[in-house]
Image (cartoon, rainbow, N blue to C red; front, side, top):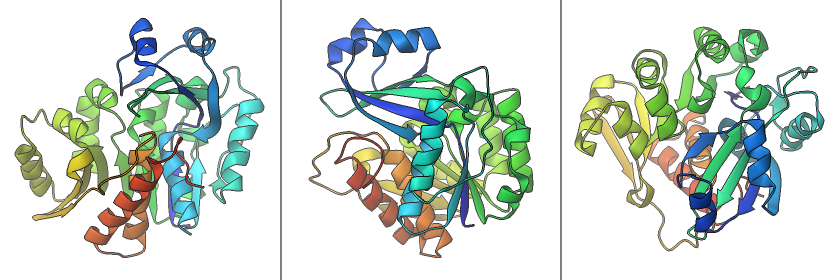
Length: 309
């Protein structure tokens, strides 16, 4: 097994909305907000669903890696309910090995409402459901030991049970990579994330806002200095400014693709990570890995949803 993803098993519900919908519901554009089941149902009651798909940040990356021909697996906690069954089937259909045994839970499978405004930005409202209750017993030890690299998401990290799941997976993995996921996550878990990046991760994925926030930097030059001192691999996406990888004293840059017809930014970071990790585990150069990540994210933002056909 090449890569095992461990993440929030969330069913994505994609809807198009006007800007006014966000302001009316006190939602901050381009962020992810955690909601309870009641609020989730209330938001959804006024919307037309465009698409429903098995999602979650790392699951999107793992499917992308599978589509690129890599042998991959995934662990994510779902209930043995209708959505949980759909979730598992959706991954198996994409040739992803699902390393989690579904059980009857009191809490439903997690769901994420992805609201796409006319400017293609996405705003997410997530009801974590049972996904956020992952614990160390849900981690299949053999699955972790039998893969070259594990890929985690910041969205999943939380004090208590999820932290135990993280710690167990990291302690027995050969190599560990993680995405910081969202500025909201970084701000909420700054001290823990900083410790992970500094002491436990081999590869960190972040966008510019997330990494600036993590190290309380005023300028991107400070990020470069931090990355060089860290001595591990940090991969940063910068929107129109392209992407950058910092490893030891080396800084490798890659330009973004121009003149794209952007329709939805959902999954841009997830598919970028898929492309980069594809390059990494297949021994491409860092530059080639950045280029593969850029190619994958460029494709996904020209369609609705976080899956390439």
